[in-house]
Image (cartoon, rainbow, N blue to C red; front, side, top):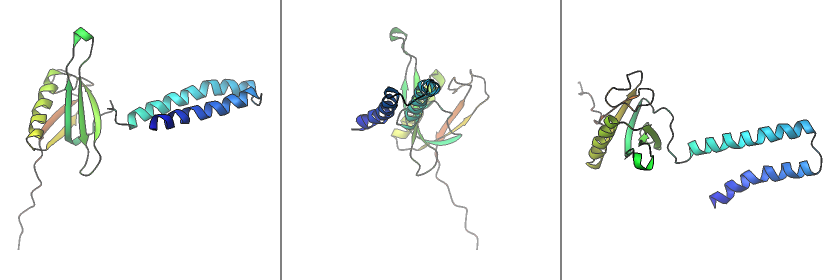
Length: 163
């Protein structure tokens, strides 16, 4: 049903423009403008929809986050597939998680596998990112030298009560 709705959303403006065009209500300048503007709007809309849906984004990961889940896809040269690391993270408690895609690196792969193992044991994982490091540093994503650190999420302890 959703595919039909999205298809109709794209089809209705085209039908309206085609009928106006066929009846000769448009000047040549408006026709050229529509021919240029409509495909650009559709491409921008499609790109934004892709980022909003459940697909992983390649946007910058937030500075602090809670790791919900992870998946590592190793590179495979025999089928010409680049590796990727997918993280499902939450930026604050109660917020819906978001999926992120990072470039594959062996060091980051090892960190993610260890963090996923700890998650499977029921230990919540917390992450920090920083940039500006050398891309050869341990744990980088390979994209702009992003440094990713993962550790156990310790529960906040209240200070001792004073009388």
